[in-house]
Length: 369
Image 1 (cartoon, one colour):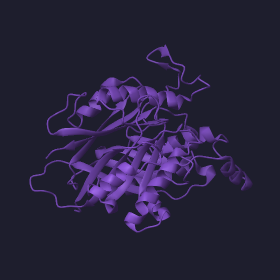
Image 2 (cartoon, helix red, strand yellow):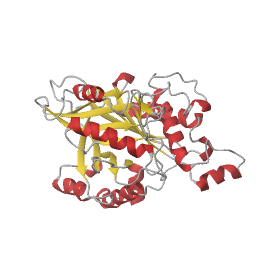
Image 3 (spheres, one colour):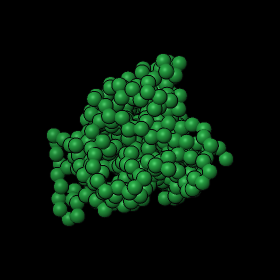
Image 4 (tube, one colour):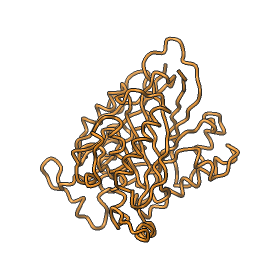
């Protein structure tokens, strides 16, 4: 069995185009650029259709890495999986998390499963396929491929499945119409939810969390169907799904572990604590000896019934600030308080990602052994 070693590095950024922290780590030898497999980031835009900080951040990273990899910037984007989540409301801090992978010998005496990562892409989608069964089916295939790439055979060892998915624009809607086809919605903003939801269901199917007989009309309607580990983020910069699977594998010699829990709602602090405990950590500043928090990855969603534990919220009724921004700020503040840092990855829009109004939360810890 192939043995790999996965590295995880969290790097603060001063803006979406700031690559200085990453380049400093590369120059110091801490990161081998040829081993970079994926970069997940939080950028400080609005997280909406017109949040071009995501594309800006990817362009800056590709331009900086191109000469180090002896590739064009375009080729870098094909080689490395980039997932930028817009919106750092409240105390959330802009940053990137860099995942590396390389061949390694498993040290004698190393016990248990360690962090592993796998990546895959779907084919490009037609605009009329977004938010529908075609996106679900193709995503499910890509999740299986990514699991194989990570050396993960047991679905219960998958603790986080991050997906970057497309959205609709007026041009894309018009292109579908010119072929005589209708899209799931004509609203660019609503299309983000459809794409996120279908992608999440595409994670749930191969992991056995739901049955495979999902209909187009189930997306954004059957909220009893969801994945406990899916995290999906939509953007304008692509027309396919980028799938990154994170879990623990016996084929990994990594110094890291990952665990997860599921928040039932936006104020579910015990779930965050449970996720921390799953990798041997406690509420900050109390951590276990020999273990250090690297990062937390979570989804945030405004409860669709307009209430949290019986009390009304106004996130869905605010015409000045979108509900996803409210949710990121609320969940981000809760997690930051328990983790002791605002540099955590909290993404808004959790359709079919955890129960309605809640969402998955995953924690990566570094082990000293």
